[in-house]
Amino acid sequence: MQDSHAKPSGKPELSVGLLLLDQFTLAAFSGFVDALRLAGDHGGLSRRIHATWRVMSWDGLPRTASAGLTLAVDGALAEDPADFDYIAICGGNDYPNIHLPPPLLQWLHLAAERRVRLLGICTGTFALAQAGLLGSRSVCVHWNVLDAFRARFPAVRATVDQLFIDEGDLITCAGSTAAIDLALYLVERHCGRDKAQQAVRHMMLQGVRPARVPQAHFYTDVSAIQDLRVRQAAHFIEQRVDDPPSLDAIARYVGVGRRQLERAFQQALGISPIAFRRDLRLQYGRWLLEQSGLPVTQVALDCGFADGAHFAREFRGRFGVTPRQYKRTRMAA
Image (cartoon, rainbow, N blue to C red; front, side, top):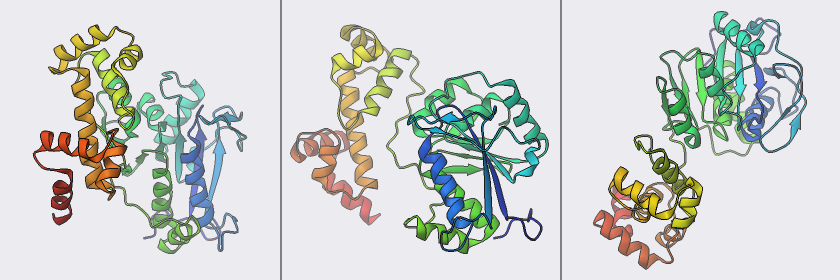
């Protein structure tokens, strides 16, 4: 499908300005750019015939990725944001920073005023929210930062059940490899399906994942837990669901004693931290049985159980069926 905003003959069909924030995520940025590069020419020759891009920072200085690699940029903010079809805000580990440099804030507002479509890549969506540019739109964020985003921007509808969300003038993306899917989506829109498939072949991908595909990660929503200590502990347990932390480690992470932590869990959830940890592992096991295609024994090990028999006993006690029965039922559905 060709976009209605087609460029005059001789100019690339797709132009993207990539704005790097401090500690940007390298995988998301590089995957996005490489998809454009491989779609922009024939045979992976990297000429910018069909797609082009410019890498910027707000002050024109190099930016360091969260991986520690420093990247030189093409320059500072373009004088006219409307030079681009899209402006991609590439974020990363600096999302807790609540201060946007005034020149960047002004430029983002200028881009919105001139109706340039904006892309929130990884935690770049935090910057767009901080700039007050989201309005009533729904946004997609990475599962790992959902709680932080909701806490900071409670009025914005944020979700993790998609790879990216297209709201017309704003597209927000979970980041990581989902940025490749977003880039291919834009390539197909502007340059045609053949160019998108060309990039898919060169990147040795299975295909283009549509936006509605859920993020490939088990996630439990802890946002409703009122006690900050319990919410932090629950998040820590989730992060290590395949390598369950000890009660002492959980208490140290939160900064309280183990008995104080146990009391807090009982008051907030009516169960102990150990019971919460066990239930989360079983929920993770059920998710793996639905999503992964792994054998039951491997699922048991991936959930931190010593063996398949222990996992099967606990699973049946929680869900009323054995893991194998549950897997057969899901496959038949």
